[in-house]
Image (cartoon, rainbow, N blue to C red; front, side, top):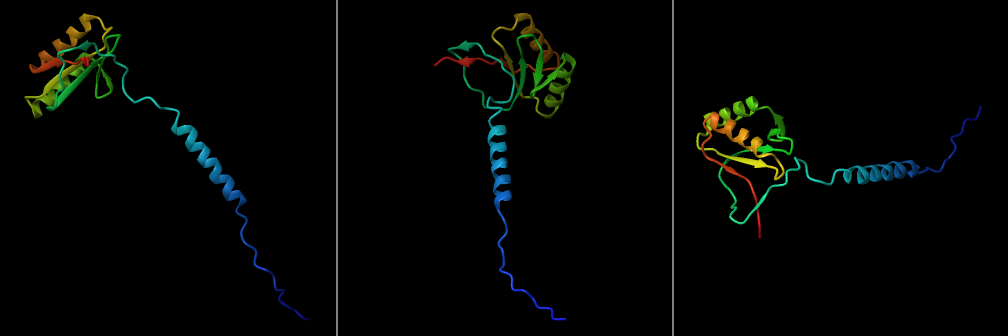
Length: 134
């Protein structure tokens, strides 16, 4: 028996499937990265005022949407939870500035409720957010 090794030419790997996979990944990331183009957060349209000024000190923000729902740090909270969150922050920093951001179409009664919750736990440095007219 005569066994001989055949001399095969080394073949290079076929990269066609790799190119297909990379193309599909490229398309996938292009499509899904453009789905959410608006910024995260709540859609609250602030009223306009000429006398508005920016606040740079440490602050605690309370958002009130059109339906009168309260939000703290992007999370929906009840009045009691709002008071608890603010009380915790006031223990750490008693001079914290509380900003109430209310939608311009919200009923005045909801803004007053938010202010009552803030004042109820000792938040006396507070302001209402507005969009400055230029």
